[in-house]
Length: 132
Image (cartoon, rainbow, N blue to C red; front, side):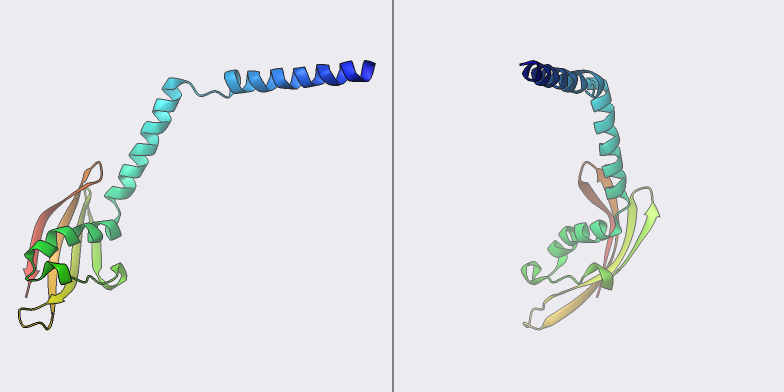
């Protein structure tokens, strides 16, 4: 009988301590949560800002409309192009794209772009030169 009371007492004590830890000591306040989320978002934005591979991929959307056959565009892997971070969320991209020509052959078009991360998952092209 005493053993049963001791076990029940320990269960209640452990449950109480667990609740205290959850609701008291380790519970994040709204302000702490807001600060943590803001810091995580700032870190994510910084990563996007400095990501040359992402800048290259985003350049595709600006290059395709300038091609004769945008639907046939094939861009190389990022390892085959030159991306350079030039500061202030800007990247210089030197790359090429292959697409169909007017005669149906494959045409390799080189291009140079300056891409800028504008924040909130938005990219802009500051300069785009198609080199034929």
